[in-house]
Image (cartoon, rainbow, N blue to C red; front, side, top):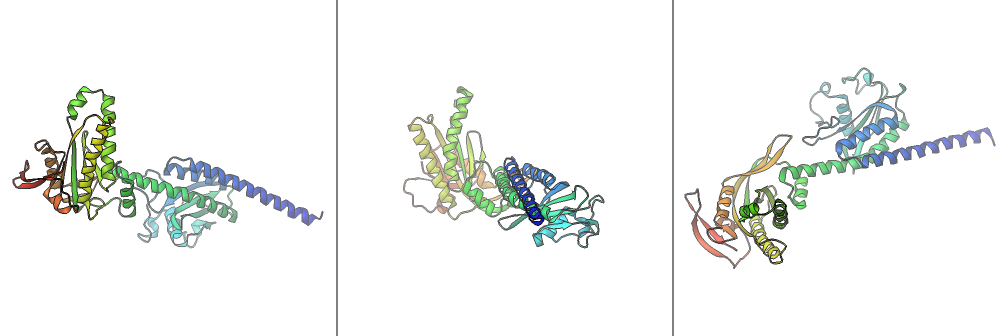
Length: 393
């Protein structure tokens, strides 16, 4: 066999072994990142394994945006096109460049580079490799490695391999970002928020500022719960509440309402904020009727102990929006409508009713309902004017 053939076969074998090693590394990285618990763990795993594979000394992942409350030092909120270059960290400068070019960049001597030399580099940085993190055609951020071991610059092979790592990891980072955003929405609006409402909030503005909104407010309260709770075992009380809320909250959330606040033996629900519908009052009345029917069914079959409840509905204008800090935010509904709905619910005892609806709700709801009792103009505690009420159940 000719020497040229031996040399060629030897090179082909080396290339094949390198490709096999790279595939094994990629598989190991995919497993490691896939098993990470959260975004912070995913990023730290990506950086650590990238340093091992590419044989670099430092690394950082820089994302275009950061969720409020994120704690990882590798997550940086970057505003492209504002400020002066001197105010940017080098990894932010690389991300700014990446947002426009979306391709790998290798810097052999960053301190004297024509584009990046003016930034505040650490004097010990002698080589840089930065690749984009792309998922579904969208730039999520950049992965930057610094200082190739052995004091040699990053090679084209390093760039190719790191690009593959980035492509593989970006999909997982995107999923983790989406999950964190969903968790944030649920933390603000409550764990009982329906998946449909969550998806709507993710499409639009999941952290809306305070604004005026027309809503329908529902107050629900259990009758005789205090006596039951005093006499029953704690485990029995918890089991009962779980069964009760499973039925009642689903009736609300399935119609686009949110459980704004659990009140121990009841809740405050809102229809019309943060997501508004043209028929929010109709949805609220339907939900109230559904709740009564569900509880009656559960009681008649013995799955729930005998239960009496009261529901009050009122509609009008409130101020709705998130309040709090970056560490903790809540969605708040403020206005006289809330107080009146609570007063209406309290009147259920006086009228032996399960559902009382204000005239404001009745005029806004669009279903022709024949089974109701018009109670006329009623005095509401704490208010000088009378309020029209209808008894539905």
